[in-house]
Amino acid sequence: MMLATAALVLTTALVLRSGVHALILRGLRAPRLGHERSPADLGLAARPIRLCGANEKSLFAWFVPAPGVARAPAVVVMHGWGANASLMLPVVAPLHAAGIAVLLIDARCHGDSDDEPFTSLPRFAEDIEAGLDWLRHQPGVDGSRLVLIGHSVGAGAALLCATRRSDVRAVVSLSAFAHPGEVMRRFLATARIPYTVLGWYVLRHVQHVIGARFDDFAPLTSVARARCPVLLVHGIEDETVPFNDALRLQAAGLPGKVQCLAMPGGHDPTDALDAHMPELLGFLRSTFVLAASGPMCPGGAPAGIQPTENP
Image (cartoon, rainbow, N blue to C red):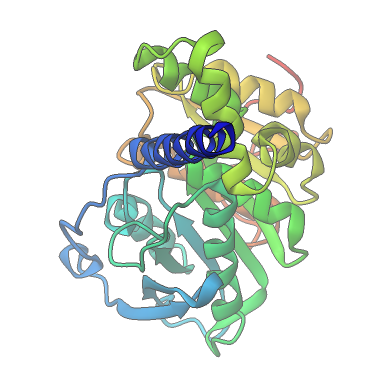
């Protein structure tokens, strides 16, 4: 009788634990938004493609070839959490006009890409790598001039990807957070979930599901290990990820490798980038992704970009 009772209690506990885990993943699942527009709406000739991603998942993407360039540099653009490739379209036209090919990807569980039980910053990085692998086999792309542009989680994934790949020439990070654990703590506080009672368990389980500690793939860790130049673009009025995160990332990077571009606005800087494209393109020229011409500061740094030292 005692054995039967113990078995019942254990079974009930396991069922409850499994249910709690399912609720955690469901509560953290990103909303899936449809594409509201396409590159054609901007007058750009784009080719919709399917990429073979990790776990044999299919990823939707748009490829916008460079105009009239035989071997052009190329950019992989990755959106943020709960977004999709169409929301990153504002960055495409200026890059295209500068002679850069652009690949916009829907991460798994987003847009028109395949679903998964969960996704994460490391999985966003895997999806970016699928894009890089595809670009390297395109005849109109110069595989020695590949750049990553990511927003928020996509920015963190781009930084992580840059620690794994030697073919990434530069990273442009839009509104990257410093540490995912801090983001999760802010989320828990907004949801009024006390950290000392439940929050610590949620964070522990999330790391278990991902298969890595937050510290292992935090942008603070990645930016210190990235060997390519990094441009941190961040809105000074960002209420989702404080601007101070950009300064912390800049301070954590290798000396001379990480620059910061402060912009007006909040967490989504894509619409405001138009006015700051000279600085972004200047950064790419300074990395030799683009021909060395255009507005540059006297010291050789792109115009308008803060020096590497802490402001």
